[in-house]
Length: 524
Image 1 (cartoon, one colour):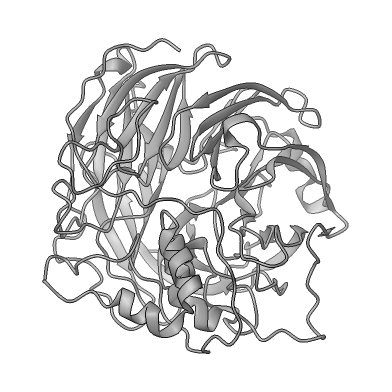
Image 2: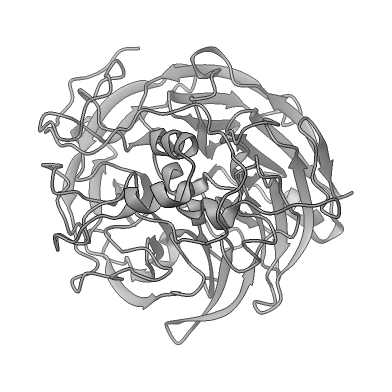
């Protein structure tokens, strides 16, 4: 794979060795504790406040479980914070799929699967996000990304595998460009880099840019370092299509990280000229929370950056899920986004994770990633309002909460489950979404009536492992040109056919490109 010289400066943040699994234990306390910040917790906006995360975990988690949770990368370690309340006292009345089992509603079914392979065929090589262009699906993995030919959805084929380590490797595509997020501290920006401590000034993390004009042979053309790395990113092309703006979300600064200092109440904006993507550079790092954002305490996380932003470029708006805050932004000036609304939920939202607009831009579905994706929170112990979706109407520019939505199926104590990534299904006059729930499977729900969302289809597998909580399940589930595509963390790429009569007309809608975090308007 050839590569042009990169324009870069060296920044730093964090890498924690990724463990393959964590072991569940019996006799856990029944106290529910809110999810903490990214990794093992950070300083509260530089206040010097003592970090009690480790002490809290030691009191609530058996040592073996604590050690394995702390070893997990990204936010999986916060699963230990909810372990007491996350593990349910299941009995014979609870219906839980056995390992290896598959179940679904009668209007949905698996039609194809491509298992993980090559360098990605390990428990620690987690599949992540998805993006689509024409007849191709691009699937992120902590070790790089895959390119699939989906011209025949029921018979997808592997086109190529690009090995380029750096979690999460969330992926987006635009024209002939592919962007990857790197939120783990690396020795340099190359695909042969190794893990390196975030305390080392010369470490690197940020975004990588590839040329995918030939999907069978992606070419690495640029890397841009960003403060605190890039946990996720969102594409917002300029109106004239001459420049691609990449809104980079990152969070959890620490005083010992030289290039990720508190309070980090900001995002980063990378500018990629379409005519010369190798000249991509960090344009700015606008502060979104000049007052410091949600201070944390109680149930909510402290805001120190954003986890994810969803843009609706044709409407010049964006919604941000920023740890302790949900926000709306005016992005009519792509280089200078302005926060226009902010909302909090200190009772039920531990960590604002992601957002999805409805097609007319008058609603937002926010997700709460309680436990960081590393805990079994889909059970009666946690309940139906935590680790769920929050559905908001936008009324006069304000976010008005209408309801919560969470899958009703009880999951086993060896299944990590919480609200995660999804997208709209293009049905005119309806607000319908498909969503991943990790090992809770995939849910399709109708939120046309914001106050009364209802599930219309679901697909679920049994636990990946019977005797341990192995992080797995659907990371992202998106509807694209007639089918649902799911990047299952351990099982690989799934293609799922939805045959419900309410969504039948969606099969005729065709898009040339789809990045769910950069929403298109599917009916003008």
